[in-house]
Structure formats: structure tokens, C-alpha cells
Length: 283
Length: 261
Ligand SMILES: Nc1ncnc2c1ncn2[C@@H]1O[C@H](COP(=O)(O)OP(=O)(O)OP(=O)(O)O)[C@@H](O)[C@H]1O
Ligand SMILES: [Mg+2]
Image (tube, rainbow over all chains, first blue to last red; front, side, top):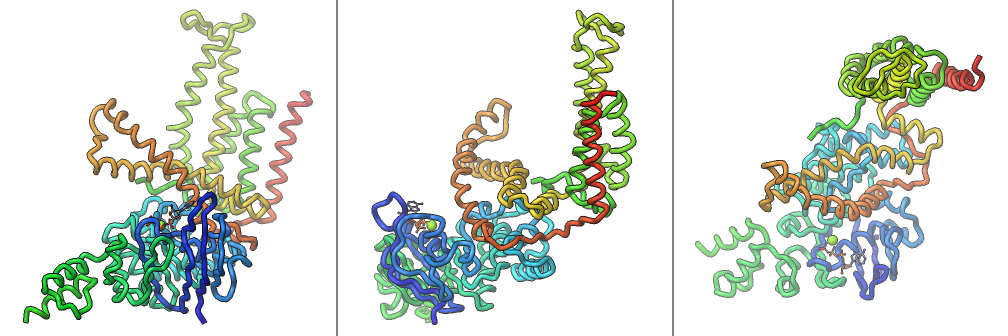
């Protein structure tokens, strides 16, 4: 059975006319890695808040349809219970720091203190989580003194230590430089490899191509396309509807128009695929 | 950026091992004794026989003397001078010297010394407290005793506003600089250049509040489960006895004020 199950979900923010997401049907299997793409205002963050329970428990407004995770329905649960199943991390690492802790170690323990984990177990979990995300050497630093990539890894670790069943990530690398992005993806990859269910909103198409099992293209609050990264990310519909696409895809599409890329070959997404594809014709 | 956000000095000492609430009560006992207790020399005695030996007990004497010397002495010294000079001369006390049109009297100097020594006790007791007590430990201890978690959060978060602002300001400055804003140069130019920073700093804070709220909720801040604490906080029988002792001192100090012998 799917661990995430959305049936015909429509949501309107308070005081707005148009729903931010509408008629969303989404099933995610345990351990699956689903990426969500979409232009600005498509409703990606709204979907993340819906999955993580902040809609309807934090943002009021009007939610229709059913949102179910691990067999429990949001409307019938409370936020403090819901967050134990679904972890949420988002763009700005700075705003995800609790703001009341003095060291990274304490920062990561914050969530466990809140749910009353005994001290011995707390320490073991904090240390294991830090080892997993490779930030053990930051333990005694102040969360404020870290680089963006480090802060984001601390934010992720702070969520992971709670051992959620599903991880929802809303553009976690959008404020990172390439090094920070790589660091954060390393963690996401590790989590996915350990069997965590991951739902990731991301603009960096090439990373998605590498990791995702499935991609969902969101447009105007609706699911426009859904399928494997290869199918969705190279669809001609995306550039028409204002989605960002990989530069390698767009180069190959232009090349294809001039007969330089065979029409029956799938367009590339990553640099490597482009290089391989173009090199094949040189022979 | 400065990595240290607290005064706290991590060190193994008997004073560090005292329960935070006990230390807090002790600090208040010092302050109340200094302000309400009997005798002109009491505040000075509290420093010499109380606070300074305690700083050795806590093995933070160097840090204590440094902070007290750099921060407190100049302020208290200045206060002493001002009070001595400006204390009204009502004519019933010997004039020590004249400064311009003002008379410095024995009474004035005594009054100034007493005020200065009281303030010295108050601030240095707090310095000693902060040097040997981790703020998280204090808050966890108070939460355990029934202080609301939200209140404790607000307090510790407030302690961090300055480093937060610093970190954010430096990000904004970098961003503005990369767009060609000149933040170096003459003082006037610098002030002018810093004005555009206030917008993002203040507006950013409003947007941030919502995200921060979401972030701490995502970590079960409002959970109804009983909270635990990462730090182990000692609270021995001796602590309890000490708290009663200090409370008694506080009562006696007030008493001495109400019933002058
Ligand atoms: N708190 C809110 N109140 C009212 N409307 C909102 C709120 N947040 C978002 N919206 C609206 O909902 C729609 C979807 O916004 P959402 O933030 O989910 O988009 P997004 O896909 O995450 O965009 P971006 O790429 O900019 O992050 C937009 O039209 C937006 O203006
Ligand atoms: Mg968004």
C-alpha cells in the first residue's frame, strides 16, 4: 500500500479566489523518490505544506479531498502528531534554525527534547544522525557561524533525527552554491539509499534526473505530467508552459530541429547524456 | 563571525555543578543583601568575602576579573565620581574639596561609594552566574519546574537576537556589495550605505517569523508529550538546603530594613 495517498486534493488559501492546488491525485510508495517540478507559483510549496500537515493545521483556508500518510488522515490528526511521520525542510537554512540553541549538537537534539526522548537515547540518536549527514565535526559550533550548505545539512539532520517516515523537501538547495548543493544532495541520496521515502521540489533538473524514480510536473496547481525523469523532463510541453529545463535538453532539441540529433533518440538531460548522445553520431 | 554566543565558560568546578536555580537564588540574595542589608561596608564585604572567593571556586577568576575590570570598574568608577560631585551639599557635612561651583562632601562620597559598591555587587554577581551557568541549562531547569516552554524559548531566542542580526546583516551586506554598493570609505558614506540594509533586515524579519514558526513546529515544538533535556541538570539535597539558606538571607535582609534596631 502507498505510504502517501492524496485523493482529489484541492486547497485555497484564506482570502483567495483561486485554489493554489487542485484535483491532486498522488500515491507514493514506501522508499520511493519523487521529484516535483514547476514554474513559480505552480503550487509546489503549497503541496509540500499539504503533505507535511501545515495545511490545514497551520495555514487555514479550505482543504478538500483526502490527504493520508501511513494510513492516517491529516484532518483527523493534529500537527504535533503529524510531524512525527512527515519531516519538512525548506529553502532558507537560516530560518530553520530553532534560534534558541547555542551549538549544532543542541540544535539537533531540540526536536527530541520536545517529544521527550530520554537523554541516553537522545545522545545516541543525535550522534548517529550527525554521522550519517557527515556533520559530526560541527557539533560544538554555533549554528550561526556555519556556511549555507552546512546550515542546510544541520536543518536536514534536525529533521532526520526525528526519524520521520516521509521526508518532504521544498527546494532545499535553492540558496546554495554548487558546493553546498552537492553537500545537501549527498545527504538526500544517503537517506534515499537507506529506504526513506523522499518527496523533493527542485529546480536543478540534472540532479533530479540522477536521483528521482518519478517526476511530477505541476502547473497552475494541477499535475500536468507524471512519469520517469526521462519522460517528463524532456517533454516538449515543459518549455511551452514556462518550466525551467536542462540546458542540455534544449541544446539537443535545437540540434534535433537541424537534423543533428536523431528524432527517435530520447533527448538528454545531463551533460553526460548529451556528450554520449552527440558522440555516438561522430563515429 | 564570532562563534561564541554566551558568557559561559565550560569548566569542571564545584560552582558549575551547582543547580542553576540555586545559583540564581544566590545571585538575588547577594543583590538584596547589598541593597537592603545593614551596614555601610556590607556590599564591599560581599564582594571580597563572597563573590571573589566564589569566582575562584568556579575556576573562572581570570575571566571574572577581566570582565569586571574592563566592563564594570570604568562604569562604576564614573558613577562614583558623578555621584560624589553632584550629591547635593545640604550644609551639614564637611566639605572635602570644591569642583567649580560644587562642593564634594564627606556625605556625598559615602553615598557615592555605597551606590557604586551596590551596583558592583549586582553586576558582578550576574557575571559570575553567567560565567558558570549555561543558559540552556538554566532554561531546561526552569522548564522542568513548570516554566512554560514557550516562555523559555522566547528568552533563549532573545539572547540570540544579536548574533542573528549580525549574521543576517553580513549576508545582506555581501549581497549589496556584490551589486556594487560601497560599504567602505568615509564614515558618512558608510552610514549612507548602511541605510538600505535596514529594509531587508526589518522586512525580512517579518517573513522569517512565519518560516521560523513552521520550522520549530516541524520539530514538534508544540508536542503535548513531556519534554526532556539534553543536559543533565544536578539538583542535590545540598542545593535545596542552599536555596532555603539564601531565601532566609533575603528575608533577613528585608527584615533588617523594616525593623531598624
Ligand atoms: N500564504 C499564502 N496566502 C495566499 N496565497 C498564497 C500563499 N502562499 C502562496 N500563495 C499563492 O498560491 C499559489 C501557489 O504558491 P506556491 O508558493 O505554492 O508556489 P510555488 O510553486 O512554491 O512557487 P515558487 O517556485 O515561487 O516557490 C501562488 O499563486 C501564490 O501566490
Ligand atoms: Mg515555493
